[in-house]
Length: 108
Picture: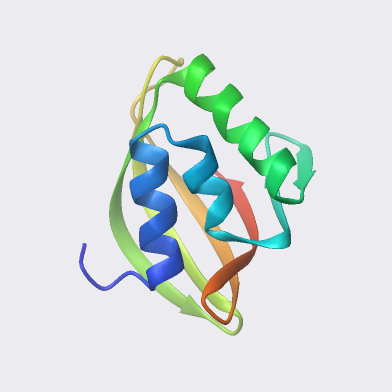
């Protein structure tokens, strides 16, 4: 999918490369991720979350559909990895500010 906003494209590429520092770099310094009932705030916490997720799930994401929102976009992506029910389609709700991600919520 070629029409992803640059920070979202960076997030997807870093996530698929299992590059936790690259994932964190796509966010604002005070950015936040809400995933599996937990909030991870700030680039160091986001990098730790991304590293843990890469180790536990060994997942890759394939973008399928992009919906614009008032503050960013929702990316629907097929996620495959080492978890029950793989593959699954998840909604990645990105709030964007400038050329970075302000917040991400991942939901089924």
